[in-house]
Image (cartoon, rainbow over all chains, first blue to last red; front, side, top):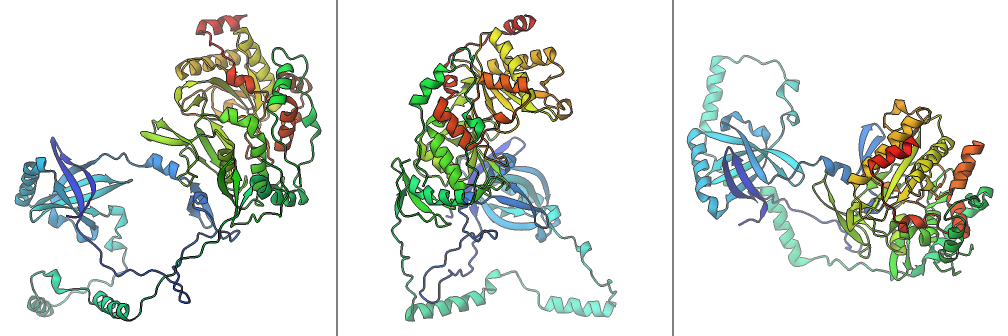
Length: 299
Length: 322
């Protein structure tokens, strides 16, 4: 059985059914890796800053939201985390609605809810009640950091959970620029209905395989028998390790040549005042000897 | 940090791997200017922190650190980071601290050694913000802080005047206090405690002190946060005595136009500024601070060790009445 991606409980009223969420749909798209045509090396993506053209390490990448053209508000993972919904571990049923009342436009991704052995009876009861009433449950649950709207419905001997788009994510038909609704004649309508009737068939999805995928896989099988590209291991130059002072010296020399202001400030030499009670200046003198920071020669 | 002269190391985007006290670290873009007005580079930021480390590290030791990072320098965007970045070297020490808001433990960076400090600087953590508590005793503040924040046209000189009346009041309570610049516009006054005490003790105490000051000097002091109340006065911010708050650590750089530092100063310097009305001597930059430390050592050393007990509320009233 597929691995559970979430576990928790299906709840409504006083009913609490421990369940696991398992994937019901697996995409079978053929996936490719990017290779260098000259040597077959794998292509790695780098994050490049458009300002200085330098690679940006992951720790320096923050999220920016474009408020207006070219203007961003930066936000950290931390700030976003604060807004995350609490991981409640429950699928909370809010309403029971007619299945036919939900247009498929709302459906996103489907999972199965599998009950714990201890909850078999409650699970079967809910399933049967929904089947008889013809109603399905509208519920919410938190998957990782998102609160998702979903529909729970009987599917053979299981409960299926389909995540759903939110109302404001669906483009309303009214926003389309449709031609004016023409009024067909009864005769035309009868003919069209007859045509529909002649093509009517039971829904058998296995009759519609992805033929394009089959052809791509077939080609790949043939090629694999003849020639495979061996991806070579990338070469790594052994890194040279230097002292911090060495690493800094060149950079600092350049910075100072550019006129970075490191000239002594007169005020820096001003003694901490006289007439101090308690610590001063004896304590200062004491710590001065002990805690003198290492001084680096300027190069 | 040993001084050796060797061929200049490459310090571009590819970086250079350095060894610091047995730890290895890759430093990149050392020539990047972090303080454009002063031409102060990332390399200079790292150098400052490496050189100030002997006096700075004791104040960071065992405290949860909140990073304030400026990947593009002081003119770019910045962000606070409480959770120690996941892409940290393995040897960076962290401590879990319970976060009420997140309802989970957050692993904070704890800077106890030079390599960790250099690492923090290398990820553009210009400002170091520390908890008033140690990670292992997060409910026990080791010190009390008053953050004196001037509302324009009040300035650092006004802050010094308020610091002096605050000091006088604390003195009557037998509490010794230590001033530092915020590195920005204000002054902060620290009262070392280093005794078993909780924020439930320190926060109301600090609030009471601020109220007493406001009552005694309504022309100078305000203790409520409201912006319009603050014009021309100094906010005595007592609310930082809170387990969820952090205060800029002594010797931390600030992300100001120039590389100014939150610097320990003497009461004589505070008096002089208040007397002469000139506060510019209290704007201290990285190079100034290194020189001061060489001469005077760590003026804030007593903050780490001095043990002082808070008086009760009546004590404050009595002291205020005197």
